Image 1 (tube, rainbow, N blue to C red):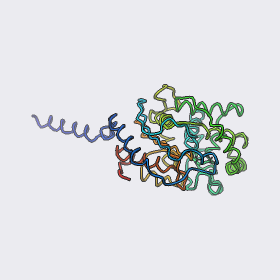
Image 2 (image 1 turned 180 degrees about the vertical axis):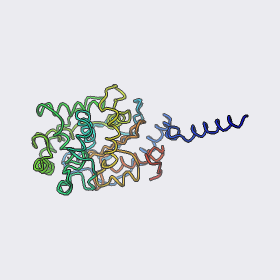
Image 3 (image 1 turned 90 degrees about the horizontal axis):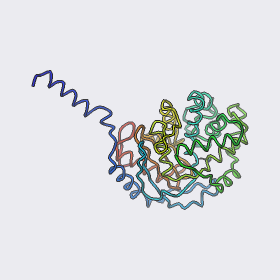
Image 4 (image 1 turned 60 degrees about the horizontal axis):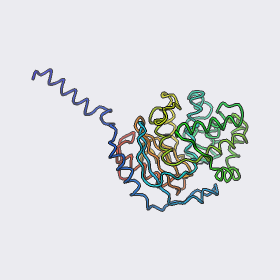
Length: 339
Ligand code: GLN
């Protein structure tokens, strides 16, 4: 073989074997089902942590429920465990309303009017509002999420709710009910979030009436969703903003990386560094026990388990997702299995 041809073949093969595309190959269907089953089996008996109880009704959700789901950007679904139970979406809704603001007004509106810095503080921190010039921090803590709801361009309260609800249903590709008991329980005890809304209003970092915003934000958090629907929301981000099951575009593709970056920086509040250290994937948690993580341009992993740690993050959900990320080697910065 002429030496030039040898060199050419060698270079081509090297490129095929070591190109990022080859490294980041999509796992097989069998592997996706295997890791979902494994993660469920491995963590199902973990009893650590406790249901959230600052919203009284969340304490009544059966603590042993546990489901794990992967949905690919093609809309293929792999499930294990309790995948039908509809729990309240809570803070997992936050990035999706930030996406709505981005879709309506562009990412600069989120950066300038809410902020994109992690606070390093708990999700309901008022100290962070006093500490940081942006006041609201980022759209994934309560202050920033309440600001995001107020920023949605809407004619009135009904319209604001309709836009927020329709957007979350669009990401899920399903009609989603409001869990009225959760809404009532949360709004009756929402003194902390009311304080946050009023503080933001005081600093001119809330863009609608505080009580209206608080109601719509609380309804958003009370949306009922199952873990498969949650994974579909993540898969819409993995699919560059288009829902894989309905084909509806929810976010312009060019803004998906900006949203995922905020999730990577702040999705777990004061545990965000720890999460990225362990799992290496943009993700979002909620006190209902749901977590969704996104493997960009491939698939989403969601899990649901009501028992939380001190930071308000679901213990089994986090373990299941980081186990899967490690097993499949899909962490954005390389793999770190067996955690
Ligand atoms: N609705 C909850 C709250 O505002 C959401 C918090 C969360 O899930 N971390 O307190």
